[in-house]
Length: 367
Image 1: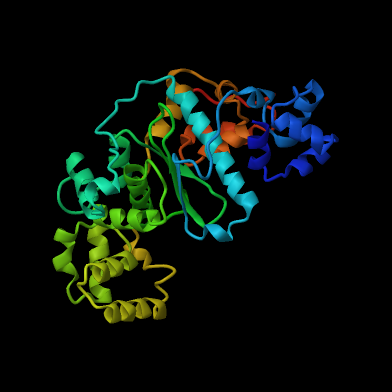
Image 2: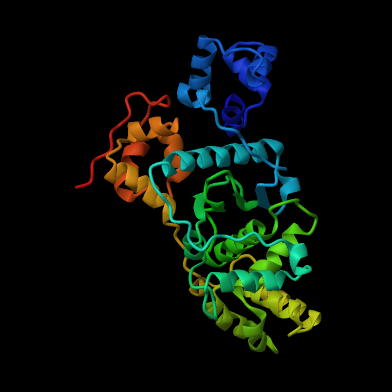
């Protein structure tokens, strides 16, 4: 927990030791469980890192990069500083711990389930895997109406998340008895959100055993077929133009760029035609921002919001009581859950000023 809190604040072990006025050797022994944390050091950790003392006493295990339960979609991961990567891992783990605590108060229906379908069992036919998921979820033909709802109806949990960098769109994990968790950037436009979550769904479905070098391409193929089944969209892509791509975006609710790529991958247009369309998009400034009038609405997850509302409204928790349950501060809670925190309760969390949870401003109770 000390390591987790330190990395959440992007501090090195030496940095933290210096701030606490202790040797790095002692700091290392504390983090490795070799020595008990002296009471004054525990107080210093809470004050310096801005976590309640109870945070450091939690018995949770931590998962990070490299485990087979933690799939990343770091589009340019090599460019990410290690401090940033560790901060993201730490914040994701803290959010996962929050979900674990809050889920103990409810019984979640399992839904259709997010299946595990190994690529080798389908002879590498990624498209058949995507079709199998659509069929098992009883999705009708045509575009997926709401990707977030599909995932949550199947027993997953989508969590809007501020990664603090545009280089990360999403990450997902399966952990013990928790629902499959998908953390998506809360800065994504609707079309990119839908493709990103479908990509993460592909990881959840196909990559449960051993990561492989083709994971990202396989997840992209899964997402393309899940959102735009080849049998249905194929005839619409013949002789594709930019104007036609814009029309298809309105219907399939994916980006124009994704539609052009889909047309090329299905051999409905030549590579030269695809290149020409991309050049047209670049000339019109559409590679970085497609027309605002074509924006796809962002889909709003409901499960995390309902969990928070259950505690604050139905179970009568105050801000301080909920933060105590989660071993969190109001500031961290608000930062991690602002996008799903019910509007009526935001002011109470944001106005709390004591980082150690004392003198917390109570939330107004809803009538």
